[in-house]
Length: 361
Image (tube, rainbow, N blue to C red; front, side):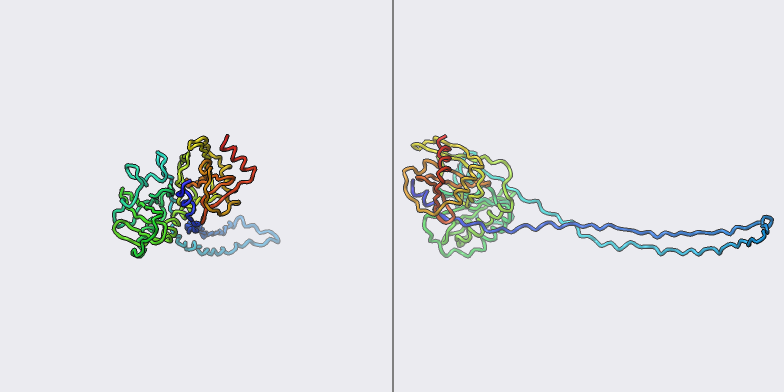
């Protein structure tokens, strides 16, 4: 196996920082109005006149005397309590959605990361000062070995522009040539595009084509990678359909962002003989998840070593965002890129036999 593959494995990708949550929507309360109406009741007792002719004098009987007219008191009117004005109901902005953008020809990366003649974008797209107000941003890699996210950044895009221009002027640009360059492309609703280029390591240049700013690993991790990962945690998963390409032989392009082994949802197995594919089979989600769990629990750091069977059998694991991680069989184990080093996983004998059958079946 050539040295490019081993160099790629040695690059570290840190864990994503915890994102800020959205404020919960305010609850609305209503108060009912109660009105009590005072009622007036009056009774009028009429004295009945008794004709003298009918006023019989009975022995022992008392004369009937009309009672005095009852006094009617008016009830004081009851007023309803003064109604307290209620605040207007709050309106929660709809949650943003993103879908994965892939190329029809199976090239790695999002469609916007290529020009009209299928060349990866580079510094040629920079046109000068980047305005705020972009609808989305794309992260593209222009170097062999890694591929940027398939979804755009749609949350706090202006914050990324502001973070760029908050960097100090360029004073150091002496990084080695083994750079991991990238381009961030901003798209506006009116069709305009703007971009800046940079590198994931220290002592590199950030430029929009006019202004040269100091690039660093911290800027990439804290302002670019962290924004994408925070958006992923906020949104949960992309919308729409995604049909991944099962490249066999497997390309050297792996995800620029880390692929967490406990978040694997699919993948495939590729077997070669004399450089020609002999097996290209999709992994069931349960099988892919088991491989991820076993590799996470039982892998150890290792050093790259030459092997005659390198590249003959490869497991490719994929997360819900389409990022892929390659596990290449070497001897009785599999090697893959870890967070800070190359990792080696040796399956238990029973599981190793199942994987062998997968490649051969």
